[in-house]
Image (cartoon, rainbow, N blue to C red; front, side):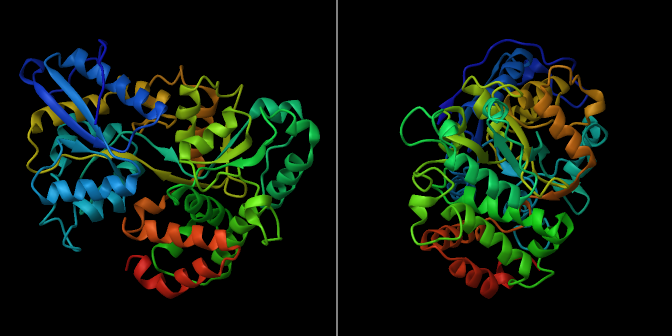
Amino acid sequence: MVCLGLAASCVGCASSAEADPSEVAGNVEIFSWWTSGGELDALESVLALHQAHYPRATVTNATVEPADQAREVLRRRINQGLPPDTFQANTGADLLNNWVRTNGKDYAESKVESLEDIALEAGWIDAFDPDVLAAASFKGKLWALPVNVHRINSLVIRKDLFEDFGLAVPRTIPELYALCERIENDAAIQQEAPDAEGIACLGLGNRWNWPLSQMTFEMILPGLMGAGAYEQFWTGRMSGDIEDVVAAMEVALHLYCGGTDTSDCQATSYFNSDVDDIDWDAGVLKVAEKRAMMAAMGDWAKGLLESHGQVPGVDFDIVPFPGSEEAFVFTSDTFPLPKGALNREGALALLHTFASAEAQVAFNQLKGSIPSRRIDELDMGDFDPVALATLSDFRKGRKVLALSGLLASNVMPTLAAELTASMQYGSIEIVRNYVAANYDSITPR
């Protein structure tokens, strides 16, 4: 459990839907899986604004990591009648399946309140991006406040080293393969590393399995089959052994094993040698440490790198994962109002702070994401070129939900574990057979 210190700032004018600041008091418990530097910095920036507006309120961030374990702890608490005052949920299926349509058909047994009337009164419906609101809605009602937009299919690159060695950003999978070969075999590039281990082509921390799954099924796959087909596949409208899905697994194996020789993948991998032993943030930080030239990770990597002194557009850049430029695979962190929360009014006041233009700017500048509010009413002048490029892609790209927004949350850990086991075995057969045999139960009907 992390209690965050709060500094004074101004949140701006309150809407008619907000409570009187003098009436909001007591502690609000947030439940989240935000534990890394950029995540905590972003949250603290919002809480600083919140306390300035509600001086009698405090906020505690109760954290469990990784997200899969956090969901299990949260489910136990809510089933025991001990919900936090608000909690983090990814938009789409993670929010709606777990906490809204808990009976599998409607919201009669929802564990959270509808925010529709609150959103209408506060003006959120007009102020927020309609695609983002739609992902957090069910049966015409909004069920949680989306606080940001993250792009999943992102590639972090060590920009200064790319420029020093005249490396081109890979736009296709074959270009990525060729670049990895160049990085692995160029003595001058390898001398940039801080020790004899050298610089890996790709930094990845797969201790909890989801980062490799994210790269395979949410970056490589939409690049191969297109955003529309990606969405169709994960919503059960295809078969589990189609060519593009098998090809995505083969690309992941090629990267994991460092080519077509799968006899000793740990020794030849394009990833860092400790890929299966470290967490996601340590994998991304390989780029900052000059231990990896790139990292396949959602753009929350930006906030993490900035919290470690890296400058976007100077030390690093974030670009679409090779081949997936036309797709914008996205998620949003959302916060609902649980039924039976001890401090409902305090939680509602915190949601109003999160929704404010000031908080949207402050939070997303540090989190590495872009605001969920419509950009035309925000001051984007202080956002860096990397964030502005993501915003441009969001406006013009084909937006599709991440797997957390499409699949049941209990499906994803098993899918990720089967993929990791398959890669470690040096073959796609384990995960290929799993997806083919279980496609009907994995995907929603």
